[in-house]
Length: 356
Ligand code: NAD
Ligand code: MN
Image 1 (cartoon, rainbow, N blue to C red):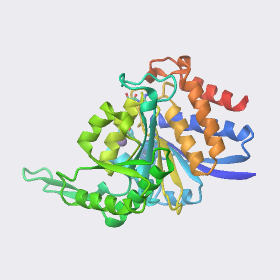
Image 2 (image 1 turned 30 degrees about the vertical axis):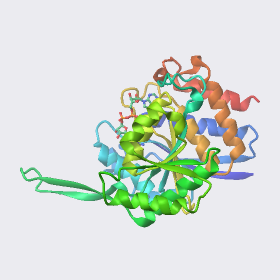
Image 3 (image 1 turned 60 degrees about the horizontal axis):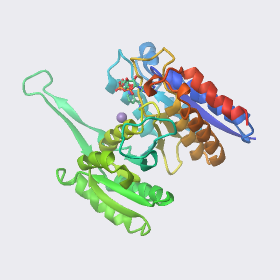
Image 4 (image 1 turned 45 degrees about the horizontal axis):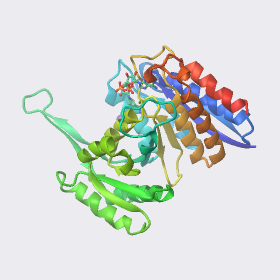
């Protein structure tokens, strides 16, 4: 029987609650006659590791992950360690080390979820946001000088390469082409950012020639926020820079009902390295350790993980089980206005997988 080797990195905060929940539902899928099994390896990296070792993960940590088929990640972020240390020391180290340059964020309003856009139906919001995940505003290029003096200076330089923009555009056009509407919106800001974003637009136009069957348009990022709220059905697949897509995808998650539901994949499309799947939310300090975390974002991320492994039927079964559970308000966690605990939602999904 086919065995998939999965690395589990719960990280910090509610990551420690939702990743084991994800592991449980994947285990249930495997047990219910899917024709494959999982071999999970857990890594206790994150804030606790930092307190013990002075870093978020070991220097040779990527080597331990290299041979895995995929990574299931929770969250990096600890109330007692600065956010830029936790983010760069763990999550970005993996994303950048494994050149997971495409960050893919599907958004839909799942059955039973009360979403804030009252003027549109649940079917009007069905998007995939593709985020450039390797450079741009988060390239880490910049510095500080004259620290503590009145003339202190700090820069974060957004760096875009032709190769980097070309590969994300090609990925986005291909993804748009694979969806029924074959429609892509290229998010830009080339009116104000007149160098890199103008190159971004030029490369979008050039790559579009390879995809004559994909309808595409361009939207300025600020106008795009309004369009997401006022005309959600006019969007399908979107591609945006690292920073722009970071912001747009939190808006998308909120419009779909809760940050606790939204999934993401950090993908190496060339499959040189393992790809990493995670809920988009963070450590949620306000609810951690209380069993209140919504595990649905992690379950949906597991669906994306299965799709990446080519297990389409198992992915479909898991998504169906998740949608049956969200459809029942008694199984909603507090972020959705309910009172169910993480463990109850997890048990309900497991039950549906094991009993049919
Ligand atoms: P957050 O996502 O942790 O929390 C925002 C709000 O949403 C909180 O009120 C929280 O309770 C709620 N929420 C989030 N996920 C939920 C879930 N699954 N179920 C129920 N409620 C949920 O964002 P934040 O407060 O900005 O960040 C907290 C920490 O997490 C910071 O250290 C930040 O750097 C880190 N963070 C990490 C990642 C990541 O590793 N990918 C992403 C975002 C934030
Ligand atoms: Mn974010």
